[in-house]
Length: 417
Ligand SMILES: [Fe+2]
Image (cartoon, rainbow, N blue to C red; front, side, top):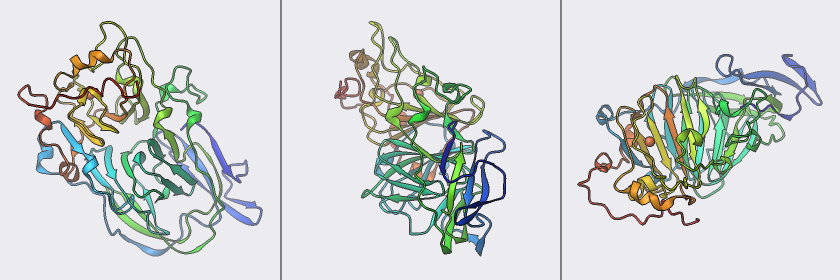
């Protein structure tokens, strides 16, 4: 994140170990990246966080190490029905990796409950972005309380100690993890950190945590820390981790509403770089682009074909989550929560007669909503849990021999258009 934020009480002079703030003595901690993005924050704790542990660390009661079926080694496109994954547990216990790579991973979490009281999670190895497909709640971290709702992204930097409280009967998350920071695409920002005037995103449209009064409580506060490829170690602090009197900096959790990605329409087809919201890694050499396919007017040129052309992303695996079934190129194949995985080693295209049907969409607003992630020079693998919810017919869904119901055409001619 480029924007500097300050919450609570933070003296202006950095790098002083202790601060006498009214009624408390606060201790400074720097949370950030010395290497990659350089983004960091100063946090002022009233306890000796994070060094005080009151129990020896132990192996966690669960782990998030991905497992792979033998079929993961057979090259093919996949379609995973995440809508059919059951709702259960809390945001952490219901977390299921569905595709995984050395630097990027994607999971689904469909909780019905908040995490148990006074328990916390910290991803010590990957930055996270949740996309909220459904539900409401609060991500509580040392940075404060960050409310979320349907159709927002929640970005949580690596190393943040947090918990998720669900305030709706159930919630549904798509979770993207990267070893690199996940930020707005840097080419959208000028040297001052402001969005350039042609950018589809504006950095001031993020929502930042509200810092409540600090928690000065002693006890046993377990934190399940993810590290070393999905292993979990439980550490136990002797004080509540949310003990900040204030913080400032450019590294913090934030919310960004997918509808704040302001789509750009052209007379002719607009290629996916226009849909990019976030970026991770040293693009285009590593990491990924994360795109938001929001409703936007299809090209209106008399020879425009709104359906995407067949394409062969030789350096990228393409991963796509469909928030609704109104995606014309896959209409009749996908449902809400469908997740497609197209490996870079094979081309793909719209199914059936989608290209012909799309001609009716010229100049119309499409009702699609989807999140896409393209890796750079990183091959992903389907996990055992992703494979369990796959569409076994998907690899043959382009075959002219496949009989399919005639789609209604709503994917191109939006109900709202
Ligand atoms: Fe594609």
